[in-house]
Image 1 (cartoon, rainbow, N blue to C red):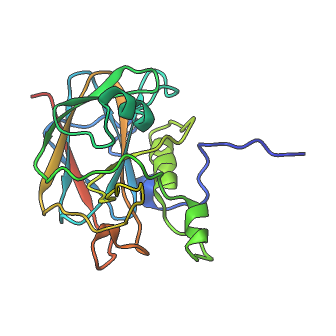
Image 2: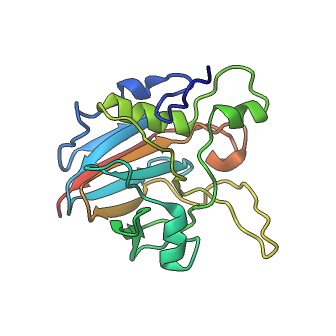
Length: 228
């Protein structure tokens, strides 16, 4: 008998299962929260609340997702963002849409040079096996799954993430490269929720390629939620 695939089931575990900021992910406004290195955290946003994500040390990529809190089958969708914006490089001032083509987040502000990625899928257990790992390796797909489980939710699907600060230049011939971030310590991105949503942040655990800095050392991230 073939076992049904469960998209919400992680292939391994880490501290993301203990990372919840509250039982259902609701934050305290104006409080600074930490995303531990190599882990994920889910945060529930009311319509109109602002989420500021901080690249604390300047070198860390953040895989980022957002789900409609009332229906997790609706989620931030990079392929639909490409269509809505006519670009693969969203910039501050644009609206980020779901797979139902509704704006879920306004991308309000960006203090970094604005280099982010919307093309690359989140790494998973299978990707690290391709890279030569024989044991389980922390990965953003599982961080997403565990961050949602930690607040009593389950991922019905694994959308392509908005890879904040990830530097994947695309050449004219369509080829890509994997390069370190160009952000600096303290750079922050601010999003405003247009729908009640659950945002998930993963401090990318990639240490086999230089996307988290030449040293290949994943670090922490921080975030804050405000209504002003």
